[in-house]
Amino acid sequence: MNRAAIILLTISAAVSAPSAFAAGSGGASGLPASSRPAVDPAAAYQEGVEALKAKDYKKAEKKFGDVLSVAPENPEANYYMALAKIGNGKQKNSIRFLEKAIKERANFVEAREKLALVSIDLGDAETARAQLTAIEGLKADCAAAGDCEDAYNARVDLAITRINEALSPPAAEPTSDAAPAGDAAPVEDQQSSLFFAPRDEGVARYMAAVRLINEAKYEGAIADLLMAQASVGPHPDILNYLGFSHRKLGMMDKAQDYYAQALRLDPDHKGANEYLGELYLEIGDLRRAKTQLAKLDAICRFGCAEREDLARLIERREGALAAN
Image 1: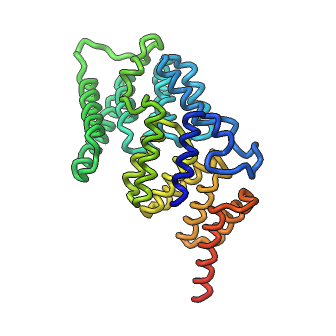
Image 2: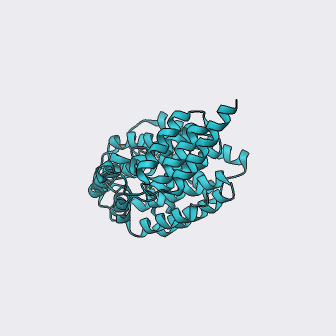
Image 3: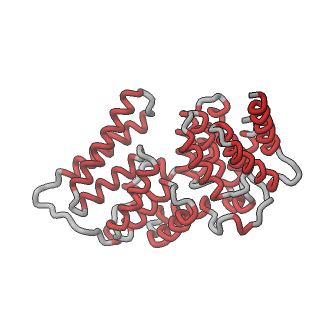
């Protein structure tokens, strides 16, 4: 992890100047430009957030559509797409994006709350109650673990209150099948401050995560990385460290998924290619580890620390196998 400070500078530059992503954040220019997505997801994400702030829901829909075209698993982008749909009066269309956000992050309280409220508007109280139960379960889990921040607990309580209030409207108040775009609830009423945090806050969270990773405090690092992603948007450096932290916690499937997401955004990201190779070694797949080494050979034409580190680990594993 002695390269963390170098990557930290990379993400700081990318956040302050989104076009820096085009150069291959954390990677090199060893692969042709066509191997990278045509969309810069972090830049499109920020433009989408600004459009939501300005209540330009049509533009927001387009920008988050761009993000999801290259980062379909990103929970915040799915959630924001849902808000854009709601702002445009497309409540029914928002549901699949809310469900995707929840699938990707089960403790996404804002997405669960919004799904409950939209479901109530559409006359589906059963789905709303299911989401209320799920949020109450998140609260119970926090209480049992004793490791949730006060702000998160407060957000959970607020969601529970809002859903309960919506489930018990005045008897004479009818529900509608859809809300006209002009009557959509203001975005600032739909969101906690987390999701419209300045980009600087995302960088600060990333820096905090790097420090925690260097101290082997991986659960805390994951929490900060997710907060950074909520502010910055899909970024290969964040996804790479999410993969690394999950791998160190023994969550190999989740780690592999994050590495795949990072490499989808930047196929020649040196850190993600190296760490994916290390994951393969840890699960006993030497052949695929060597495939990652070959990719680093192509990326690092004049050598790089990532290539040398992975090569050393592969050589050590081969030596151990030969000795047995």
